[in-house]
Length: 176
Image: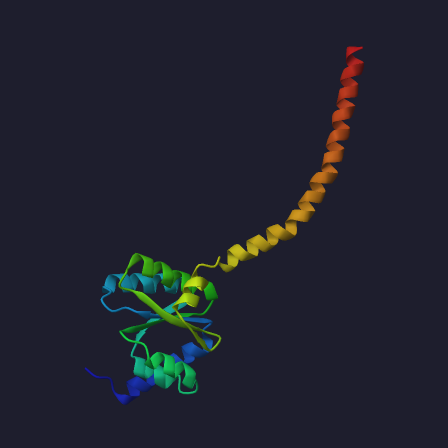
């Protein structure tokens, strides 16, 4: 049953709202993907502050009326379109979608939108292979902590050596 104009306008308004709040958008072709795999992807995305929507390209083009360069790219896309909106971490949404394409060969990444610019498949795939935000933060913390722990070990080494020498002197006196 076709949607009424009011229903279509509500979808367009929802898309505009999601596009204004998003940090990362991944466009997926889900032709020949079974619903079980699509619902599993939706659940993974939902658990990571993301959202998956199956949408008509014409409605997405209307939602992007203020961004003609993005409209052109969307018009060139073939197949059924699903959009993964990332509201938290830029990398996490791309990682989840990339992993889903590895598990299901019928699911394909078509590109993505970052900072109001369309990016092709290669850039989205390379983004998906970056470490997560938490991993990067932990690496920064360990790099900042390394000089301090090295200094503490160096200063502690002198004290350990001093205690070791005193123990050796005490043993020498006990023997004599």
